[in-house]
Image (cartoon, rainbow, N blue to C red; front, side, top):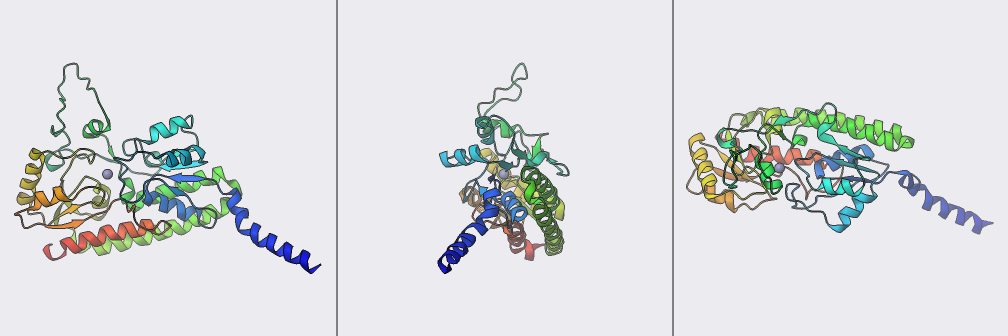
Amino acid sequence: MIRKFVWFAVFAVLTAPSASAATAPKVVVSINPVHSLVAGVMQGIGTPTLLIRGGASPHTFALRPSDARALRQADLIFWVGDDLETFMHKALDARGGEKGSVELSTAEGVRLLKVRAGGAWESHDHDGGHDHDAPGGKEKHTGHAEKHEDHAGEHNLHLWLDPVNAKAMVRAIAAALVEADAVNAARYRANAKTVLARLDGLDAELRSSLAPVRRAPFVVFHDAYHYFERRYGLNAVGSVTLSPEVRPGAKRLHEIRSKLLRSKAACIFSEPQFESKLVATVVRGTDARTGVLDPLGGSLPQGPLAYDNLMRNLAGSMIACLKSLS
Ligand SMILES: [Zn+2]
């Protein structure tokens, strides 16, 4: 009798935690900040899988066989969009289409900014060597790198760096999860509410912490921060590279150096995903200081708070580098 009871207890303990896990959908997310938002909405139900980890960048990412498998087996995939995560085309094709995937740049309420052009944001730099005035007007794109360089007029997809966009994504993420897993609908909705409230708090906090450096000019490694600058009224004056897939040529480095001197930029930021030697070259002999901005946070601990940490780290790096000079 007692023995039977013990077995029942063991059985109950073993099955209880996995009861929701068994019903939790298999979810795969492309980048850490979005993964964090999804993890927040799924808290207590399941844990999403992150594709792009560590120092990898979506601009240059290639799928490992294990990633391809995870994507094939996923019930739900969250990603940002076409021009950022080009590897997703093949992955979605392998699944037989876009069903079960959510391209968040197209979600309701997400506000997109156009790719910047002109001056130090000039996106038709010809370092890449291709001719825009080719007869017939049709350009042959040999790869994503060239495609990326022709972005003028298209959208900048680093849209997660604005908490207001993050809120729109959270709503879309919750809606997709509710649809895919109706049993847990109430939990997804309650979690989403918690995340939305936290994002409001984060937005207010960043606004006040960044206020003292609003006017200080700075140069970034690649044009990833437009959303962040716009939300908090910051003063970025140019980028070292036009498309992170292509190493900038000598002419480009010379231009950005002139820009640095002309604008009296206080700081120039490198990124952990790309080599910082370029930044050292540009900054040599100027008064500008250097800092590091990480737009992806691929190395941050995964989970619901990774998004907030990423944003706080960005603000912290900017404040540290720009503070005394603003
Ligand atoms: Zn980028």
